[in-house]
Image 1 (cartoon, rainbow, N blue to C red):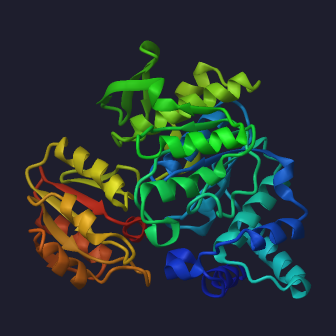
Image 2 (image 1 turned 135 degrees about the horizontal axis):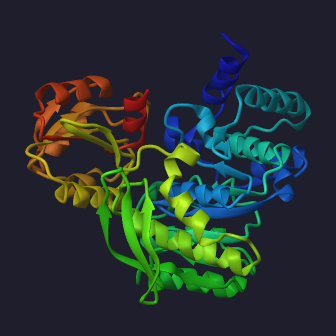
Length: 433
């Protein structure tokens, strides 16, 4: 086993990891994060940052921002989670993943220093510390930092960003963040910092006041992007791009703005990104229209983003998406209904801590399902998923492996059919692996 594989074994199997074990790995304090930060001499003080939180869309927004900033000539760090295939996807500089050697060296350094420090960090806490240390060492101009879970107690929440961006709020991770939209919004609002502007991508009567109250307390200027920026519709182009005409307060300011991200829901994300860029420019950054257009059109190329309404095959059309909760899957189902197909096949797997009834209720009954499960301990057993799905008139067969389920769908599908792969980030990860 190589040194890098030994290091991954330590990270995956000797530290509490939420993606593997769920709530047991969640820390309800920033104590370890603060001590790790001190141990590595406060690396996040050495670079500017943008903080991105929310329930759905924060990964897309983080990658879009990183792509635009990179096109504007900045050296950009990008921290996101979880990864799909390679651990190193979480930490990038100008799109390039952190090297295996850098991962090994950081963990070796931590283990040596920890002999006296005696910390017991989680996988996520170590990963955040690694990212911030790497961004300092590589001398990035700015780091786009995605919140892992929640906001107030997330390990990323020690930064003092230029702007905080919150995408939206919906019910997810309720066992940790609260059982109501208001409770979850309060946790997400924890990323709002004193005097630092905050952008809310999607306003809602169910949480606007929560954000306003926190922003007022922190004397942070607050902006609701969808009350300024909007695009009435989108068009799909032959070259594999989605085109929007974005208006600000009714005036067309970004005509024919194209992106290589094909989900209809990107309209909401892009509005929040455009407002964030506007605030950066007001603060003295130099991001002109050209890098905005170039960055939007090359998000996947510049940052390596995958799994957002990604077309992975033709004849039959095959699409995967990492949406994994009711709100995210509602957007996916809406786009499925607006996509041409003769028969719809859905390779579906979920994790065991989601509200199963809310998700199954919105899924299309006319589809044929291949019920499956990802190769993580949190995966809901495919048989249990199928049994519960039948109570919602969702019919299909149980296939325990994602790859086998996709193969079965492909063997049965006709040229004009559509195969969708999703329900969980980890189902998409298994497909790509």
